[in-house]
Figure 1: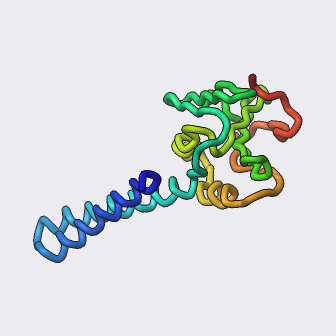
Figure 2: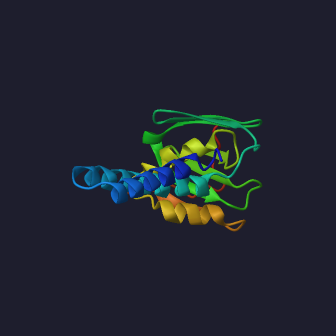
Length: 168
């Protein structure tokens, strides 16, 4: 229930909007229409967040503060500013799967998709210009395979993340 709270809230708003639309007339119907649109938007984003969440119990803790990401892992960790992000990959073959973030200097930060607090990465990634959220969610649904390039900074050449230094 907790994972789907946004979807459930949106569905409740849609139900209230339908009831208002049927039970009233005039200006109140405009309010019902606005509530219905808001409810549908909440359902849509809630379903996306639900698909993004991989559960918890994975290694490490993720913290997001404004546009800064901090990963505290049992063996590695690091800090990366969204403004310095040059490339975002998903390695579905890792156990668990890992987000692989590469900065402008070529340093890499790998974050398990199941790390505590990793669901906050959805909002961070969603603001990347040109990132296709549906493609990201589809790649996340894969169980294994080669790393998938999800986003890269336009007009910047960054070597593939395989074999590069990792942030410590």
